[in-house]
Amino acid sequence: MLGLQFLVFIDRKAAHCSSRSVARGEQMRLMRAGRAARDAAALVVVGIVLFATFEWFNFYETFGAFLREHEFIQLDELLTAILTLGLLGFIFGYRRLRDLQDEVAHRSRAERDVSWIAAHDPLTRLPNRVGLKQEIERLRGSDKAKLPHMAMVIDVQGFRYINDIYGNETSDEILVNIADRLREVFVGCFLFRLGGDQFYAAQEGSQTKDWEKLARRAIKQISVPILVNERHYEVSAYIGMARYPDDAANIKYLLRCALSAVSSAKREHSSEPKWFDPAIDEATAKYAELDKQLRAALKAGDVRPYYQPMIDLTSGRIVGFEALARWRRPDGTFVPPSEFITLAEETGMIGELSDVLFRQACLDAAKWPRTIRLSFNVSPAQFSNRSFGRKMLETLAETGLSPQQLEVELTESMFVKDVQLVSAMLEELRGAGVHVAIDDFGTGYSSLSQLSRLRFDKLKIDRSFVSSFLDDARQAMIIRAMIGLGRGLGMKTIAEGIEETSQAETLQLLGCHQGQGFLFSRAVPAEQASAMLQMTWPTRPEDNTAVS
Image (cartoon, rainbow, N blue to C red; front, side, top):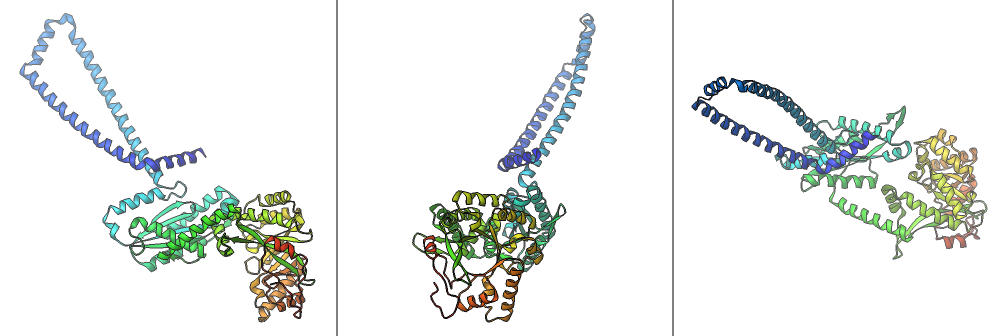
């Protein structure tokens, strides 16, 4: 752990000063080399002058005669000692010179290591954003800057969920595996890790079809289950692509264009690589503005729960309300839920949004009779939090709503990734008295074996089956099977999207317990929902007093 912290520290510090220190070090080496050359030249000149002087005055013979005449002074012994010390000093200086050379080499390697760490991701060993910047600067200074280039951003989906549920060690292993797969795909290309779950690939050339093939191959490779600690994990990827000079004014802006393209692919949930389009920038700007407005709306309380009644198809009475998010702007217009709910999920605001809506819905529902149930949808992002069930029960206690009045709705795709975790959380809620419904049944990809392992109180038939089952015999058979499945597993069934009296009547005859849709009412504010509690809806065609 300390080693990793050290690498991160070095990476951050070096990212700011590596290029400056390398340049300064190179300058100092050049200065030292020039000074050494001047010193050597000066010593050679001094040596030649001294040698000529000694020869001119016949110094050696004169000095030898002086020593013989003054033997009693013992100058020869003194000179011998000086020569011995000089020889030893030469040996000592030579060894210190070798040590200095080793130290210089060590420092040079350290500088190269620091520069490498600054420009590379220590986990995947791929160049990072600093390395990308350095490569762009190198490229801009060469003749290749004028050649066509292709680029793409790979955004891995599902990684954050795995990180939240299974921890950093597992997610790190998955990132390393993904990086290795991308290396196999982008042979001969530049490959970088931008950070988090994003990668960047670039290549010289203008072959659009070849680049698209690489992108599709990358998506396919990433989607192959990854084995970590004897467990398989599944992730996917969105890819945005851009070309120079078609899309970007220069090499530097290729990354920006590719990022815009991948953002568009994520918004559209596109399974195909998406090329940059000038219109994408406008869409990105609108997306950012909507994100800003949503954050402000949450603080101002403009996003509130509305309530659509759930009707007992036999008695025609309201048995509960489903809380649905509605964003009303100050000018009275509404933002479609499909826009801001998706935005909240992509930007990570879904947790905050759901918390605000759930608390307000509980406060509203606490004023209803105890026989009226509140149905609330839970997003996959919320259910990935292990403390979600506990927090929900705490909110119930704080708002005074009985757990028996709450019905939590889950989509079937939520319990495919980790059945054990979802099962444990559902049992925690059910143990407190909360009812659990499976929403949009038949539109996901869960298996009946998984459905039998989890305990649900209600099965919601998706509106896509209800809308056409009167005219489609196959749809009618599917609905009949769903109702039979619910009855066999001891669950109530409710059909969504009922818009015609004939649909409600037929569903009631087939044994469906409850209905919901525009035939009965649209979602309304809390005040109108309370006023509707005493109303009864007819279930026969001859009665036409239903609320629209």
